[in-house]
Length: 492
Image (tube, rainbow, N blue to C red; front, side):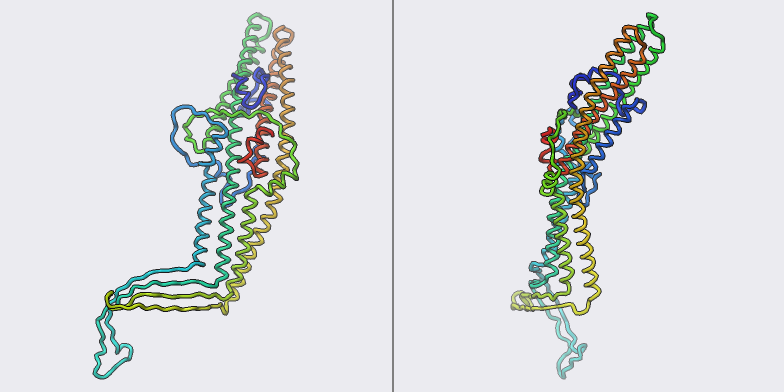
């Protein structure tokens, strides 16, 4: 069982036989805990540097989701593909970003209406009685009170801005903002892939640690039984028994901690993909070690410039800011439009006649210097900010690509070094066990060898997790996480 579970991380069978590893979650374990914590923390930092930002949506939103369905009451199989597909449907960050697209489209349609004809209808029935004397009209022999009489009016009104440059630029600005929101939503899909992929890989690493600890627990039990037998035979002191018992109980504590950590990390994974928290699931995707071919930083950066949707979104935001500048400047230009109405007017619908009016108008601001200059300066500041952010974002993408290439290379070397350490630690443990069984040495070298093997096992698992996260982060940095995560995790 240990070999099978450790194979989830591509751990060779030698690890399954290596005893004495205390998992990273155990506060009482020896050096392995701190070493693993450092490696995992490094991987999480890699993850953070590769995430980028989605406009209006915090990175924490990608850790949540909208729960779909109810628990089946049974254990379901969950592959990495399944988890990512669920995340692309239920992840909160993507849902919020999709809502932002709808909001931007709504604003675009509102701005478009200012360029389109506006037609309204109105129907009214009035009963009037007029006092001519109140208006200073007095005629001899004429009663100044007229009415009551009825007026029926059915009318349609038309307004149309024929020339309004400011409104046109406002529409172009909203159009570019809409395009920016759509591109940012596409980029959010990479964010979901990265977040879900990391959560899944972390659960795989936890499962491997649990099986490794179980194997180490079994080996510690053998060492404890041997120490008890030697003590009963009078060939070793009770100190050997106590030392072996402490090692055995440390492994029990570590198993409790690592099992708890896996349960918590599976909850975190369920949160990102919209699974009910009481739904049991089994991880079915393997994540073996696969070295990534040498990646040229310049070529990767050039690819990122073409594929990163958030960069394209920022370029659209810059165009929107430029349109905003033009709109602010155009507020001082004349506008031209037409206003008209057509309807039926009379005392009753049967005694009425068609009437209409048509008006063409041109208006221009005469004195609003402060307002115009203020609007222009505000728009210019927004444009400068968008331009500076785009320039910095391009350099940040360049840095992310290069950072993650370095992380992939470093993690690959860590994996190779950890594999060598595992083999050496296994050999040292075997030697110590043989010497203890032969009565040549006490249990202390065995305990020390178990601790070293524990550390080597844990470092290997952590290094492999770090390597896979670095490859996934590189795919995100280039902008191909959703489409090519299998290729990058496979090392091709």
